[in-house]
Image 1 (tube, one colour):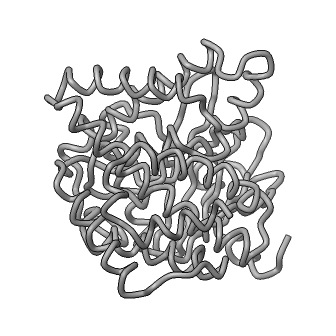
Image 2 (cartoon, rainbow, N blue to C red):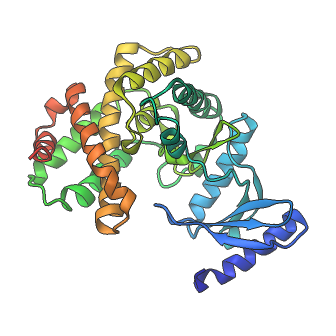
Length: 337
């Protein structure tokens, strides 16, 4: 265990003692994924918890406040045991290690997307609607960080992230002025739909844990106000999940039917923007894969690039907006070469 975390471990041990009445018998630092947060599993004979250290105070406050709010609405998120925000640490419920992505792969050996998996994804979508609509109504969005809403600035931030970390990493040819014009056009188009809902921001199968055959949700501290379609697209077009298109359509229709019970939506318009947000989401994730994979050498991000490109090509054919984005279309065509 790295010496740089000794003070953190000492603070988390004290927090664990205050919560459980006993000192932890063992502390294990968990492998880092793609975030700046550092996780520790703390054990004693009858109890265990996760200790979290994050130097970003704004993220920590958002996580604590969002969690307290979501629990009031029976959203399955980890309980917060204790926190010391002045030391950038908090102690939360340990929900185990079974990510939905691993659970999915373990249950699809004989069938690409069997009924048991389809039903689990429906449970996940029911909870997503609870996040977005029910719990999202009275959420205090002043705690959102780094953006309070998925507005033009936030969309352009994601598109430029894609430019810097993917397009330039692959040395793809582009005209900067034309590309920036496409970015402006895409952002303007996506902002035409209703965006008065909670947007989880990174709603994908690595941020969903399965415990006792029920889904639980983590890593929502980057949430902000936004459109319904973004999170749905994030889940259904996650590269490594490789969900068959027929199953995606079943889940898309299920989601729309369930949302319609709470908020009236126009199906054709919803689907049109769904593919537009799927297009944006895939560009954003390719930026992340470029940074974490190509630049930092993290294997599972590198492995995600080919299926993400496959999804991007499919979405390019499904959404009409791409015909108005000639420079982006030229870049995508280069990925075919």
